[in-house]
Amino acid sequence: MHHRIRPIRTAAVALSTVALGAGVLAAPPATADTSSALRSAKAGINTDSTPSTVAADWITDELANGLMVGSNGPDFGLTLDTGLALHSVPGHESGVAAINAAFKPRVDEYVGDGTKESYAGALGKAAAFARAAGESPIDYGGKNLVARLEERTANVPADPAAEPQAAAIAGRIFDKSADGNYANVVGQSYAVRELSLARSTEAAAARDFLLKQQCASGYFRLNFEKANVPNQSCTEGAPGSSSDTDATALAMINLIESHDNSPAVKAALDKASAWMIDKQRNSGALRSSGDGAQINTNTTALGGYALGLMRQSDAAQKAALWVRKNQPVDKYKCRTALTKDTGAVAFRKDRSKAAKATGIPAEARDEWRRATAQAILGLQFAPASKDRFRIESVRKQARAGERVQFRVYGLAPGESACMQVKGDFRRVKGKTKGTKIVRKLQLPTGNQRRVGLVKTSDDEARTTILVRN
Image 1 (cartoon, helix red, strand yellow):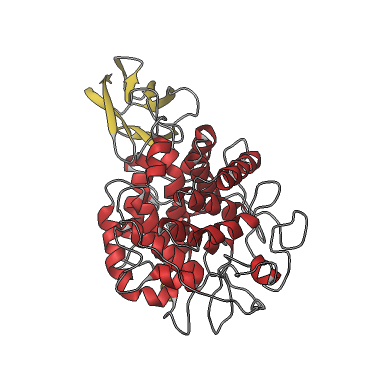
Image 2 (tube, one colour):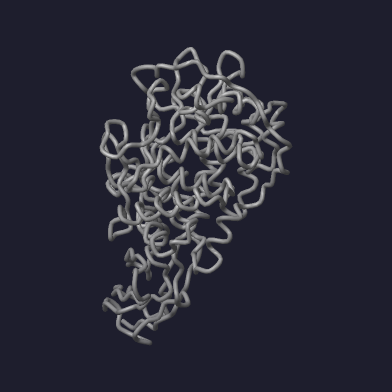
């Protein structure tokens, strides 16, 4: 999960002198409505809102006075990831509002004070959240985030031929910091999104520089070249130009959300989408990039969400199904130590398996929060069941102690549920194809009509069977 705005580096980037300036026009009104791109992408497909809703419920409960707080204090980046995720889930406006109320007075702690410290990627992400919260990014707690972002975006020189290096880095974002420059492609994509939506005169150059970071195969790399290198473009096979799945997904998402419909952006999105589909496994999962690359819910959810916004619904639903299988729902008689954290998404299957016995360890809670914040996006495309939710007993009566078949219909693909009668239970999971699940449950003693139940995270169905000793 290395796509955060300011990743740790061992050395500062060598910077050339950059002419910086402002050119913001009047920003269009901010809106707290759910992304129009998401609404239109989901319009023609049958999705299940349950997994994203229960994940959003869980992560809302993880907020402490509107902020995500880790061992080192407030984590503003994760807080904004959470806010942007909650913004995508209907009914979670209060969580977005709580984050906004807590973050707005402390925004400079994340983006810098605007004089000695100013972090470009963080400014773009903060502006994206402000807009999602229904605030104006040009007046967010009295701060003009867009103007500050423009100050951190390299200008196009008056005479590109006379200033070839200035022309090469035109539109590139730079941090201003005593700790060095950590601006990267992810931050550039947030900058493009917000400069475009603010109708900034610097939006086109920022967009063009972002598109330079896409390699011929269609992926985006994570880091820029040093600022004094003449060729600022991604060069396939060259050092520093390796593929990055998370950066590619976020570049796609932010380009789509920028509402830039230029031919260049459309072509870039088509190439990135094709690359992402090629990298997706048959299971629906995607592998992260860089050191410690592995298949995980974080990368899979981001990639799936990007593909969903690109109307690649089959690929998006496959990714969402894989993520949902890593969202344990062990309720009622199927309770485990994870039951109190229903809705949380594990980074990987092994984390879920271990936590069923012990619960989420304190030192692992941060990982579950990060995984869930991104998973909420991908789960927007979770496929729904094609059948009515119900349970049936194959027999109307049976003897106590017998094992009797029960049939469950209508679980969504990958949806966890608990089948139970008094004294016995089975964990079941919705099938990818077909909806009928058949399991045997042992009937309890006692002459009585017994209830067979199937319970999901947010619903239940029941049937009855007559039991005789």
